[in-house]
Structure formats: structure tokens, C-alpha cells
Length: 91
Image (cartoon, rainbow, N blue to C red):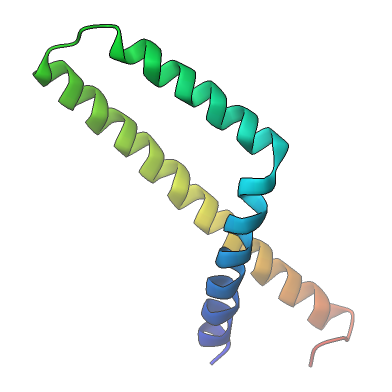
């Protein structure tokens, strides 16, 4: 039951996190930096094979990063719940 509640809380929090992320100045600055790098990559005149391989590499990096974020985000909630139990706020 605790896991199910945690999944619901995290799912709802993810929606809020998306809203907060897109309003964050650091995030927006990194997005602009990424956009510039993508434009530079377009000028490299890579072959189709090279472009696909680079795309696969970037997708793998993004998937790993996303997985790490999900793990850490979930662990933060678990740690918070344990802390609230430890100090007696949750039973």
C-alpha cells in the first residue's frame, strides 16, 4: 500500500516538477546552450550513418540521466517519509 501511495504522489509531483523546471532560469540557460550545440552539430555534415550513431549515443545518455533522476527523486520521497516517521509526524 505504501508503495502505491508513493507512486501516486510521485506521479502528481512529476507534473508539478515539469512546470517548475520550464520556469527555472538555469534550465532555460542550459536549453539555449543545447540549442546552440545542436545547430553546430548540424553544420558538421555528418553522414546518415554517423548521424544515426550520434543520435543513439545521445538517446542512451539521456535515458541514463533520466533514470538517475527518477531514482534520486523517488529516494528523496522515501527519505522524507522515513524522516517524518522518525520525528513522529507520521505513524
